[in-house]
Image (cartoon, rainbow, N blue to C red; front, side, top):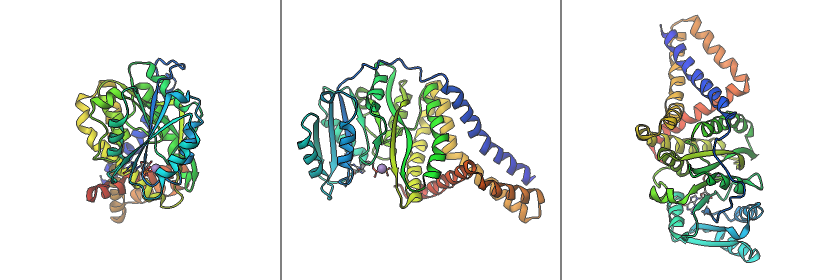
Length: 360
Ligand code: GDP
Ligand code: MN
């Protein structure tokens, strides 16, 4: 009896993501179904939020500078929240050496978080910009045509937001990171082909400005400002897509990898918890995607936990079947994709517990 319940939960836990992955893979063949004009190069405001990014800001500006995009159509807005490491000085110095790209610095008197900083930028950017690209200072674009490709999708009026495909960059623990990415990227792209994805990336998130203004700016109460904004745009009936020809990467921290991953997971969990109420007003094509992602992030890890607890209990009570299932589950850890999956589930569970006690 206990064994049956445990098995059912385990089958659901592993079966649903496999089903979803194969659905997403099938969708890939259909491309993103958005019309696009590669010659569409509108004026664009590239916003870099910075808090103590002196070590990254020059490389970041070089990265944007070296894009294959008309430089006179890019304005970089650095919104800095009282960095104490000389970020602004470094940015000003770089700008003085590169007069052929416009760099504006917006300074906040105190640190109030990335979301608020982005809203400050949004209020500052002048009226000549219909498109806004937000990009983290510690993340980079992997192809020279990333910006051009991302913006080209906006030539289709139904596209409201565009983000990048993440490729793993240097640092430690790239094994777990890249294993996870294979699953993750297929799902992001499949969702984008079908309609929209509710997960965006801080490395490059491009928005139709009008929609940001309709939403009243970026959320300031949760960590995933990019994913939540993309989701709200998709709920409005516009496409929010991860584009297959826009690559970005973020150096994976060498130290405190788990802490970092858990913090990310906490942000995603906050985002999906807040998105539950959006389900009834989502367009049908998006409702399925959003519901699946809510299930995967909020419920699925718990199914695994309950299943393991039931097996452990019935093994303790002397069930040979439960004992062998537990042994099998442990032996499979030698198989990398499975191990990666289990680690991700643990990270989500830890993040849920941490969220319950403290919002970070
Ligand atoms: P993580 O990638 O989720 O670990 O978050 P980061 O700490 O890398 O922050 C993402 C981006 O937002 C980076 O460019 C940070 O410098 C920037 N950022 C974080 N907090 C603030 C803030 O309070 N104000 C501003 N202006 N930028 C911030
Ligand atoms: Mn970062």
